[in-house]
Amino acid sequence: MTDNTARLDHVVLWVRDPVAAADFYEQAVGLEPVRRSEFAAGQVPFPSVRVNAETIIDLMPRSAAERMTMLPGAAESSGHPVNHVCLALPEGDFDALRDRLAERGVPMTDMGHDSFGARGNARRNFYFRDPDGNLFEARHYA
Image 1 (tube, one colour):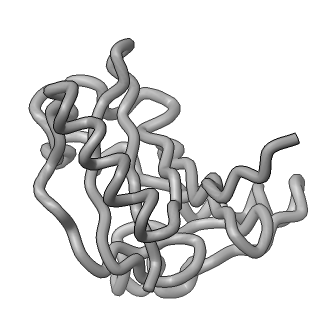
Image 2 (spheres, helix red, strand yellow):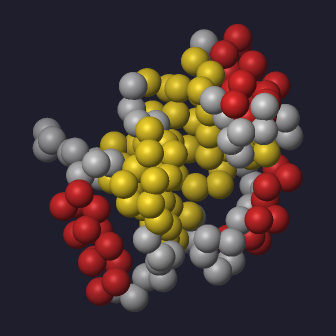
């Protein structure tokens, strides 16, 4: 078996009530809430639940769907059950991915910085779509 250093960082789910969803995932599923009180206080845009040390599920309010403009066409896909899948990569693999996508003419967003994820704030991130229109985020942590 090949050692694959890529990791699933987070999945974003659209929910009607993020606090109620966090309560469900905590109580029914047994996942630890992350930033629930900060969300309830209006300090962060969404809460999350921790799957493991490296992976979280973000609970994005459906009301935010209309503001999803990170890539042309993103707003049209927003509000569906899954917003995007995020891959956390080592820095070299992150840069190589961006280069491969550029070589193939895959549209990408500008580079983002300090985006919150399972391991805190990522140093850099960007978004792209697969051939089927699924939205992905790639990131690396410092």
